[in-house]
Image 1 (cartoon, rainbow, N blue to C red):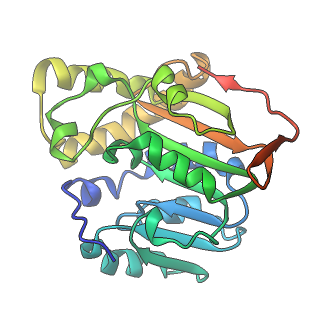
Image 2 (tube, helix red, strand yellow):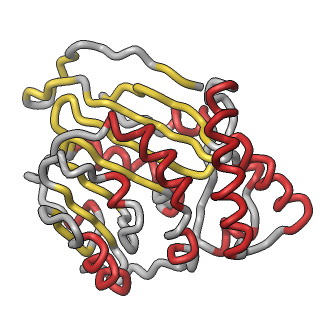
Length: 252
């Protein structure tokens, strides 16, 4: 247990953006395998889109005890086999190992992101992956980001700079190119601390479908969200690391 309290109020509002969740989850699903740790699971609105039911152990890790009741209700229905832990990576034993560790709109809430990923990397099995989805472009940082506890937004170089030691950056790319225009408009004109439900419905119902087409045409080179995927390609023997088969890095 921890005394962490999530300062954001957007979890319920964003729980119903179905098109967006279907979009990014479809793209990262092929990289999810084996035993999975979902860090910062919140109220569990992302878990059904991520957990195909074909994985092994699925652990929902959430540091805010106030969200656990809702998380329990969401994650334990309709599928079994999910576990809920109230805490952070430090709450997990050193013997805990996973094949995939996922951060969906979470890493930007963590002050020391580089240290967080290093710790996550130590919990990976050989061949395991860390998957991060975060808001993109620090120039788009708005009162909304501050209001929900973001320390930063990311771009390609920032993601590369926090790569854990001994993990290779397998993919790095952007999503929601059309939504980038809405974020820029909010920055320049509205400067809202929270989008309205009506605005979210328009974005999810009309803008996200456009992004699904534009992102492919633009080769995922721009967008208001960024995805980084790292892979453990080394065998640890004592204090020494021995490389296995290297991967080809793709993306921005």
